[in-house]
Length: 348
Image (tube, rainbow, N blue to C red; front, side, top):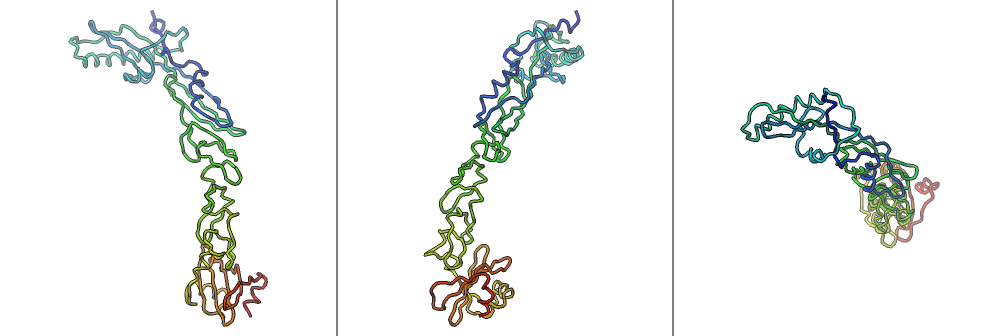
């Protein structure tokens, strides 16, 4: 009888044979908040292995050969369930050269195994049984959908040993089985989502910042950086310094005055900082006894005349005059100057 016609075809008894079984194995591993999961494609492929039994004298050895002509190790044989099989009524089509090639390769492999077993028998082992073992390999995609957005997750592996793959968050790189969507529609690892304490928006943790005053987690556009402390502060919590009028963190103020204005130090006109300012605003050179302090963005300058004081806030980069105020030399409140009056006040 022809080899192909007499060949027995079997498959591992407990391997999945239907797409539905693959879905049942994978879906329970995932949790999708407010969404769903389904297969966006799944294909089961039958992969041929040859199970060959050779005999030498009264001893026999079973050899498994894969489709590339290599011997299959015992661990893989057990993993794929090739010892516990059932016969197939409608097997996949097999070409005779595949089987004959496996048999040709199996003989030398069996001979080596006989020799390694310290058998007293010598010679070429005889093929006494050949069987085609069909193991299923699966490829597909899981699709997670939340609202109008969806993401796909590819999977592949032997059907019998297939495990649900973790979803890799495209933003954090975290591996997870729990997915959720941010309010701006990104499907991510649920553990990476955090709620803004002010707006209630659900966003990635990396999109929120902590207010150094309240501890609230907030959307970045609700937060400013205090020019004095350099810390993030909820914009609603910022206060005006009563001297320089900059918006600062309340944590930097004492009796309404920010730390920068409390830490003014005497400076000479030849100081590089003063030299830049005086070069840009020559009218300031008429004043003497300057004191200076800095924030992240500005110079805060105070000058003393015989009867008056002058407060100037200058942008460190552009050297633009941002604030101007006058006061009595002997203390008291500062009187802010309107921007339109800057030049006239400086000329007095």
